[in-house]
Length: 230
Image (cartoon, rainbow, N blue to C red; front, side):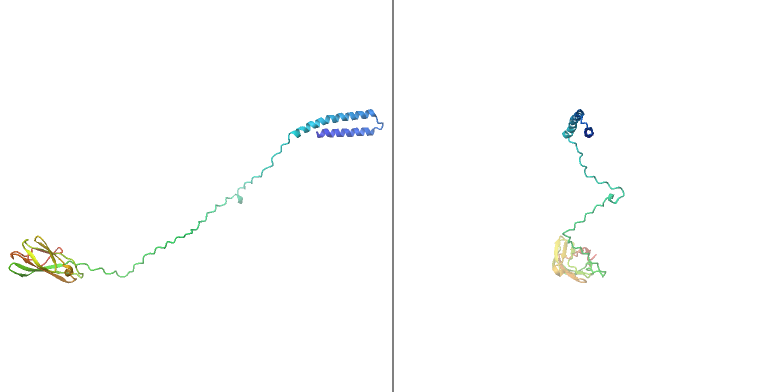
């Protein structure tokens, strides 16, 4: 379209020079030139209108503005390409610290001599003897001795008679109980306590016919008494 307008302008300029250059002022020639110009202009106007109409009706689509460029990935080996180490979380301080007191160790044992223990109890000993004889009875005595250093508060003396018809009376130094022909003597309170390296004496009378009336057995805490006839 621009080229066509340029040609119309150039043709008009040529016609102007031709008209001004002819001095005779020929009317016929001028009319012919003007008619040619009019036809050329009449032809150019529709062409211009047709060519401009699509541009007005359809606006030219513009490309969208370019978006922000993505950051280029760093090349291998550059400082930015190295992964940053993860930060370790700091431990949260305990607002309530433990107040448990440390357990104290037991004091060391000294190497001094061990305390002396109580002396061991030594078995008691008993000696039986007939003190006196009468027509229908006899007197007997049992001496209980303690060879050890520690006192012995409890003991048991057992005397066995040959028959149940014999009776025991007048007991001193102990309490007596009967089971058939067997008599058991135990301490009579604190009086029967046998001191260390000491002795106590138990006496009684056996009533009945004197023939074969001597005891057949005697023990102190299970150990046999001395002094019985074989």
